[in-house]
Amino acid sequence: MAAQMNYSFDTPKGVAGGKVDLAYDEVVTRQNEEADGKLKFGMAAAVGTSAGSTVKVPVTGTTKAKIEGVVLHAANTEQDMSGKVILKKDVSVGIMRRGHVWGRLAGGAVPSYSGIAYVVLDGKDAGCFTSNSAAYSVYEKCESTDSGAKQVVADSTESPTASQVKLSDVAPVASGYAPAVGDYVVSKQLHGATLDIGAKFGNASDTDNGIAVIELG
Image 1 (cartoon, rainbow, N blue to C red):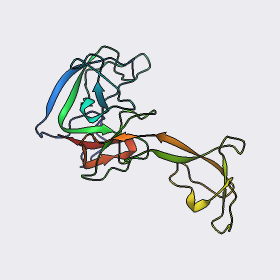
Image 2: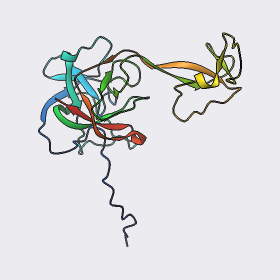
Image 3: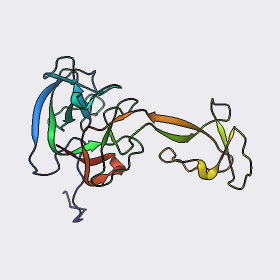
Image 4: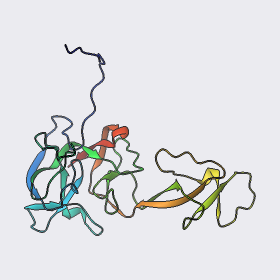
């Protein structure tokens, strides 16, 4: 017999691409021209090869005028054989052009209410939203022999060499990494240019699950 184990009164968080509230919205239907799994719920979608019919992931050089909107979550999307929910090539997708939606966050994004929600145009987070208006890099732990590696030294070190970096200067860092003296680190760019499409961050976020409210329109 099933039993209810959670009596929390907290409002559940959303899912990437899910509608947030009953605010006026505008949604159109487009066809995904990307390979299976490349376009994801909650990502910004750009005008595809067939304007007005297909969409794709934004790329370097995409302009505001070429952004269609955000890919809406569809509850009837089937899982693949590995249990993952992916958008397949040529499937129809809903695109929110105006309204409030849970958007997918890029690494290092720090959403704040009414702040500009930029769209990433390159790297693995292309199409995701970020608070960073330009290129963004993080330090991550590496081996001493890796290209560009620097040794972390104490802040009291008076004259660090070109191959050293003070502990307090190792920021920002990759998620889950806490730098320590003696480590070797390398600066890795997560993305380059970003695009202001006129979207703002809303009044809620769930950074543990990589989503935040995006206000379009």
